[in-house]
Image (cartoon, rainbow, N blue to C red; front, side, top):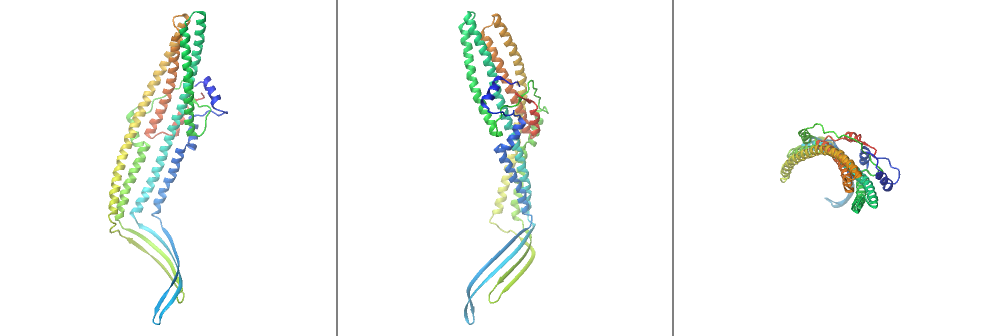
Length: 436
């Protein structure tokens, strides 16, 4: 994309210092280090990974130490009567417990592994969302730059027509109406330029909020760039991929498996548990004479639940309802992913058609402007005809640039819906960009 005079002016006025041009991949990499939503997602993933460690802990040995020191004061009854006693007793016990059979702990471990996997999947979804947000903000800034560039070019052309109309009016070859119409167009272009500059400042700030820094200029689409159709070219193929590969569907599928294990874990409340227990302890007192008792024990402990006030049965009923809910949520996620794939695919197809139509319209508008300029020069066209043709050409160029950005973004959304969007796609898209 060529460097326009106004883009250079805005770079000098709005952006201080010499800041290198930013491309899409650099913006994405900056966002990974700065964007608070993405950082939060990464920390959430790190926290969720600990669920596996916590679940495994229920299957590993548990070691504890109990110690106590007691001061005993009282009276002892004897045949001769009551005598006061006072002594100190201390004790400790070291115990090791190793679960041999505990269905609840086994199920909790399986759940912990699934929860860690779900955390990784949700983080990947955050990475995809970040890529889309960066691309959206990046293309919004490019579109704002283009709008200003086209308004600036149109303003220059109108100013030339205004000067020509004034000269022709002075020599009597044109009416004052031509001058007024050109002046009105020029004033309108000035107002549009101010609004476009404000919009650019807003869009640039939105990008800065994601990447954490300002960029003096962005790499825009190269001249004559061609946007290819998505592969495969069948919408049904993309929908099928989205129904199974979409990250939201994958995460919800893992959630359904976790809910299924919740039912198993709740039912484990009816099962007995068996533990191997080993302990070593000592108790020492000083009544009358020092007495020290040391014990070492090893064995197994069986715990059989008999009645828990219907708590376990209620937990099973609750888990079954939540399992059904997770299945319904999975169906919803599949349908949303399929709809997202359809919308994105149609967006790409519609965008490609719009780009082709606007490219043809741009060529036609250029020919129409040349014809009107020639007609104005020989007196068969009036000033307003030339102005209308100019406005049509620059409006078409603005719409064409916006259509290209929208089509590229729709392509990224299509891959995101199918669960295949990766940084490599941004790298590939980045090859279409060059210095503005």
